[in-house]
Length: 127
Image (tube, rainbow, N blue to C red):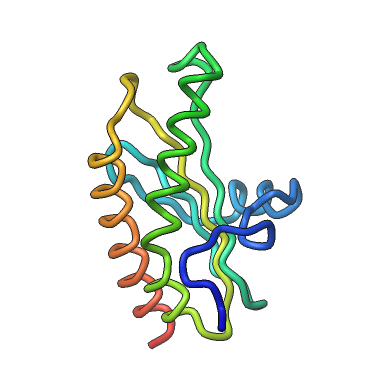
């Protein structure tokens, strides 16, 4: 039986080549406080990454906390995207753009909006 809420090694976007391709040729949209880059790929798999600007948050502790909150909110809500994708793949990267530290409830609700928007984009792409 597969684990329901995981974000394992294979689900993380770590390949430099894939990240460069995503930023160069991928599409993007903004849902405050995130800028979201995405690219629908032919091979299966949902890969995710998160980033926070050093310019906005000087301390690594703050940057790491924000990334942890984003990963947790995404991990809990990503199942709807996995169901939609089926045989296709999706590379996804969130960049946090605000200048103040968020709380988990804000991050959770905004990640939910991002996933809804991505779901509608995927539905249009498949049709």
